[in-house]
Length: 114
View 1 (cartoon, helix red, strand yellow):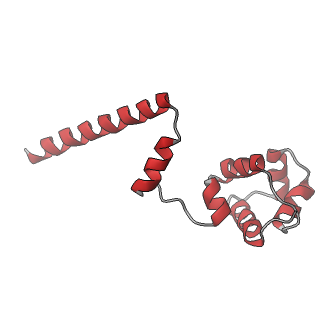
View 2 (view 1 turned 60 degrees about the horizontal axis):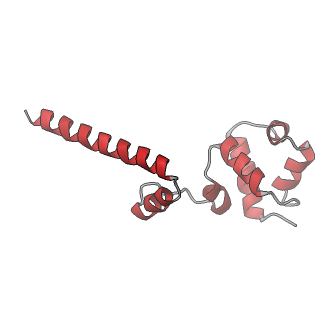
């Protein structure tokens, strides 16, 4: 199976942006150097696991790697979708942080008025 040429080009671009060689990336992914060359030349598809590793290595979201578009984390719909994917304990922690930050900002705004 062949990889999409645009995806292959993005992966090469992200690697170059990080000043990494194909050998560096191959070592990180624990694959032969030729695998990275094949991926970047559109001759080899990537697995979901490899996609996640690329995401971590390049500091890009999986969505950005796949689509080439930066993910808009400030869009309310995106935030809501991300929140629904969290386990309950993590969601409680996020809600606690939101409430903490909101109260802190209120106090800061009150003190700046005086």
